[in-house]
Length: 244
Image: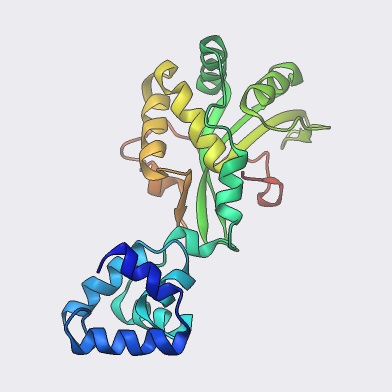
């Protein structure tokens, strides 16, 4: 079925789309849900639909519940975009510049700080059921943290957090697409395991810095492959983390 035909169907009332669907099934254009061919056809519709409403229209169904019924029956996961509120995902991405650090000197400076003091980690959001990549840097001296925040577009913290020893520590935290693009820009300047950690993160969280589901750090960076990684940083709580 061509895109023009699909677009034409989406403009029809629900009752008309039902008739079109049933006729398409009778004519052999679309497979019936009871046939083996249905699973592959349905999965393609789900994966190529930006929103669940689009999938409903393309399938000619009356409401999303039928879509979710078949997804559960066939073991098909919903695309990430379906987990976000309408237009939220695209609007968030529009707020993140294509280029975060504009100069080579800036990228080299950020890479050096991340190499020595930074941490590449994950953060899971239960509300959206998404795991995001994060770049976290913690230091006792606020000056480098403020400069880093300016480079990567993070907000400067107004006050430090106390570590387990009661010492004040300053933080810079970016996550999601912004962190993903920063990693892309500083990757050529990283070395050793930090470089391999960045490359794994870029692969695991492609292309927007998020991945559906709950994934821990060792899911991304297994201990057997990344023996130098340490347990999660204690200086931030989940409620403080913000992704763009």
